[in-house]
Amino acid sequence: MRKKKQAQAMAQINSLKGAAQDSERLTTELEAREEDLKQLADTLSNTRTRRENLDEELEAAASLIALDERLKAAKQKVGELRTAIDEKSDERRKVISSSWLDMLSAKISAKKSSLLAQQETLQESSNEDAILSNRLVETQRLLETATCPTCQQQISDERREYFGRIVAKLEEKVARQIDASSDLRSIMMKLSKLDRIGRVGAKDRLQSLEKELRTANVNLQKTENAIVELEDKIEGSDPTALTRKRLERDEKLREEGRLTEDIKLVKSDIQKTNEKLTVLQSRIRGMSGGRSERATAKVTLVSELHDVFDASIEHLRDQLRSTVEAKSSAAFRAMTTQSAYQGLKINENYGLSILDSAGREVSLRSAGAEQVVALSLIDGLNRTGRSTGPVIMDTPFGRLDMQHRDNILSYLPSVTSQFVLLVHSGEIRPETDLASVKDKIGAVYKISEISETQSKVERASI
Image 1 (cartoon, helix red, strand yellow):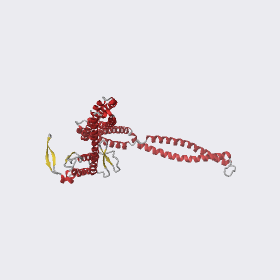
Image 2 (cartoon, rainbow, N blue to C red; image 1 turned 30 degrees about the vertical axis):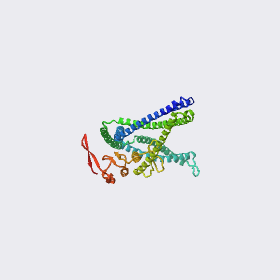
Image 3 (spheres, rainbow, N blue to C red; image 1 turned 30 degrees about the horizontal axis):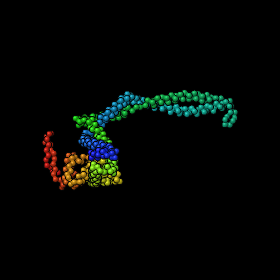
Image 4 (tube, helix red, strand yellow; image 1 turned 90 degrees about the horizontal axis):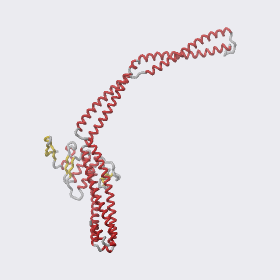
């Protein structure tokens, strides 16, 4: 508003008219960008609040989500078991339909043994007949040449007559050999056909299938019973609503990132506009007409005061950020079980990153690590800029292992004015987990159920 007044005053001086118009335009742009920044900051705050609320709701419903996932897996398993049962039942019917072949196996085996014996006999006979065939050829050649192949002497008529009778006998045996070869081929064909019939092993396969079917049916019954139990536990809830919340939470997380980047851009534009206005105001102050204007002097003074306060705030913020970072890192090193970590670092968005032994940011963090980081930030803020105050924690150990619990219980009571824990019986074991801080416990209270609609808080002891 003060810069607008200056611009209006400058417009009355002809020599400063152009500068006044530029100043008024830049001032209008600056106010518009500052309004944009305010709206973006409000939207980011609302988005972050909604996302944090969704995180809390999803965390509270984590057990229900797990039950829903188990239910989906059980229903899928039922489908797979039923498919397997149907397939094995079909196979059993096919095995039964071909089991009659096993009943013939004894007769087929006997027939094959007989044929194999005949085959062996005929094979031996065939080998002997090959020798006879050679003798027949040699004797026929002897008759044709009438000369002994060994001594080259002529054979007498009497010997030729003798060899003629031998040829006749050999020809008779060779003729029988042809019939034996035909019988051998016939036996081999029969054996081949019997081999194709084979044994299906119906008895062994049926026993195996029956065992597999019994197991599958038992598993099916168990799974169906589990589905009924899970549906009873989930009854009255809306898993679909949880899915929608998860999707909304993820979208809000992405929206936070987009808004953060938009805020950076708008801040950059505001800074550039302020720099242009600073240059323009310097020009105005250098003009003789402008120097005489009271409005210019006032604006100059207020602008300089504004710059001083901005610089002071920025300096204090940086100083406090360094202090919070150092104290949060010390708290983190005291509570974490990973001794190699260097500590924590506050990023540009004032979030905390874990630094590994080499000083690099750890990109993937477990739910337990996230909780320790959050506790470290709370402790760092609690011990910065004011006196140490009390810390109240509700169900703080749900995601932490025993060592982290011991570290937290040893550290936080020593750095707070009062440390209050709200825990349930499944989260902490008083007789062991609180042994190290027993002497620091001022009072213990428990909530006792009186009726389904009423409970009472009463003093207790460890």
